[in-house]
Length: 532
Picture (spheres, rainbow, N blue to C red):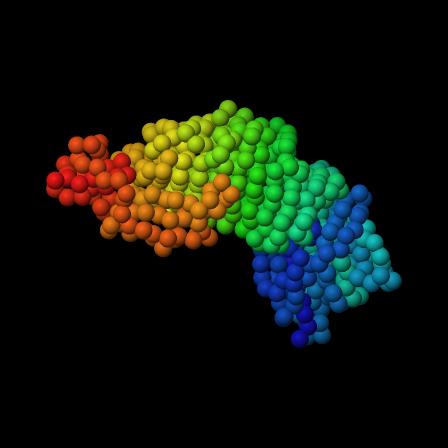
């Protein structure tokens, strides 16, 4: 059976749309074997066809292309009347179509047939026009279409052609010359200076559309910040990065024009360790970005002599959604060098950058140690708002924020109109004592925290294997905190006070608050108390 594929542009039909672009350098390089949608373009492979995108670096009119779409074999119709290797897309009336292409042969010129009407078996030998596909390097070929809105069909007249991009522009619209913005996709070997490697890649692509960095298990360094204004993903695969040579933030967002204010970017860290961070992990650089930040299965060691916030939006931009899952974030307690956890002071509020947005901080299955010790955890542009929410679940949080005010500190120390608190199964310690009973959430929401005392193996060196000591009858989940650390559990609180020596806040051994304790054993301020 013949192999065919069809490309259908779902979004380009609307009259008045100024331009439509399909740049195959921005697609994932692979064989596509089924129907999928990308960037408003639906691709359907039929009769077992494989749509192939592969790497091929070419430059046309000073624009660099890194990938191509390979049509393969002859287009048109097979003997049984089925289409084979055709590209279809809708265009508005009076359009210019620029096609970046070359012959699939290095020695033979080929032709791309262009049909401005219904593509049928009867019309296959009578294309509306043709476009040369020159052997060797690709060129830009332009087709002017002066009719009403229609469907354009492209197919190779003889064997395959390679297409790097298609640009459709209506008459009177913008210059169809494409932007030089291309994705950067780096796979780096252990021992590489990540910042320098990325800076080298950006010399020829200074404003990338996306940045993706893939590392292998092993040791890396970085001496230059990642300076960009696009989605950034770093997949560590267990890599360890020494950031101590940095004199700026690990990620520093690039300058924006006023027209770009509110630009949305996603920043993702996955399965890596970054140690010795001297400045910010992420710095908005006083630019008006609206970010989504996610860190998963990662360890961040703060060594910030500059006392900058780990997530710093001071003076510009904001993080709409900050998600910390399965991570350890810590600062060396030997020296007071941690400048804070998050700040958006003097910035735009999330709803000022996008009035339809919400704001959330989500921390789950994570270990936080000595972050913003004895200071407010968050400094917010606007706190205590109904569009903000906070999730803290199954975490170990030691010496973070002011004593007994980590949760309140997430809301910049306020306890007002915040719309949503979701807190469950955490251990809170401060200066060696359990303060789970002090971490009482606002708005009448009672927390389900775990009274216990945690002892880490060696937090100064980043070893957070731990022992947790709890009262008899207290259940500790099989996994609490960053799940990669080994946990042991012992029972019994070392210091026992009488009722006369304790305060007025009482909990039974199941963690339920009791207003008037009677004879029995209770917990007050993290200590076991016997009422006789």
